[in-house]
Image 1: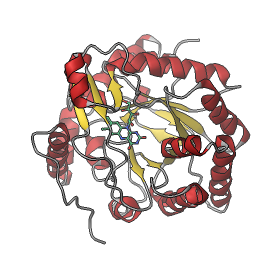
Image 2 (image 1 turned 30 degrees about the horizontal axis):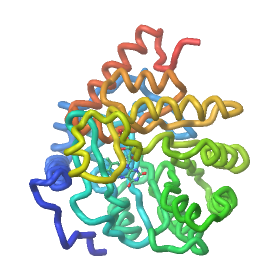
Image 3 (image 1 turned 90 degrees about the vertical axis):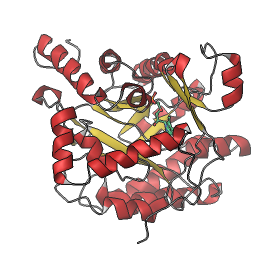
Length: 358
Ligand SMILES: Cc1cc2nc3c(=O)[nH]c(=O)nc-3n(C[C@H](O)[C@H](O)[C@H](O)COP(=O)(O)O)c2cc1C
């Protein structure tokens, strides 16, 4: 199977180019067992107090890499060696996608944020399978797959796209996240019933899962930009179907209150903002979702974690796991270790638990 390659590489001086170069270096350094051992020695922090079992999957610690970072599943082993408890690969679609025109990924330094309009570029299902097949049955890395339909797939074929991704990746990942953002945009434009579509997707996936010997959890990702009605519909789907939990948070298109100069914001243009300004939105959404749920459902918080203390705040607000993207870009390779040390310290204070004392 040929590996996915981009014909038009981003400029090495662009934010995206530098990000890719860093990933390439990480990939090279961690391509051998010795390299990964060295990375683990330098960057990893293990403590049994940080281990968690969520939706039937055991995690070495509750902090993972958010979708969009290791899109095609090429670096999950190296990211584990850097101390991350899990990696959500994707968003992956059945056919490869090239995403939006470059440049489309920027740093907003004054805000400790990133702005992106990448548009779900990925190498497609076959390329992800090629990368994931290297993963042994007993592999210690925890990998989730964030899946979606292709942007150009029409609504009538949307269920087919999700099911194709689910069936083919089922045996290679520990959980799935359904990215319904491209679907929601299209459903809104066509005035179609969103909940009915989500139920139809879930029915197809659950039907397939029923025939499998292993159970693979399914989550759905919700955005802080959605109106309450839409978030409530997803919560209803969670309660009514066998959806296992939610990923709470995504970049926001609300640029109010950003500290970057109007000139800078005008220059970079439209896009989703992640990082520090996103944190209050994530926390608010997490608390809202938590207040609407009749009992415990697994929640992964994703958005705005820039300091180890932010992770503890999200865990205390009801998250079971936390994902990070922008915080890693700003804090560098030692960020997972700093977070885990901080969480372990709190856990020792709380007599052995990273969850709040009740
Ligand atoms: C460059 C970039 C690409 C992203 N691509 C995806 C994606 O393909 N699918 C997805 O569900 N989220 C994607 N995200 C959103 C992240 O998964 C995460 O929810 C968001 O960045 C908030 O977390 P953070 O503040 O820690 O970065 C992307 C974020 C960035 C910055």
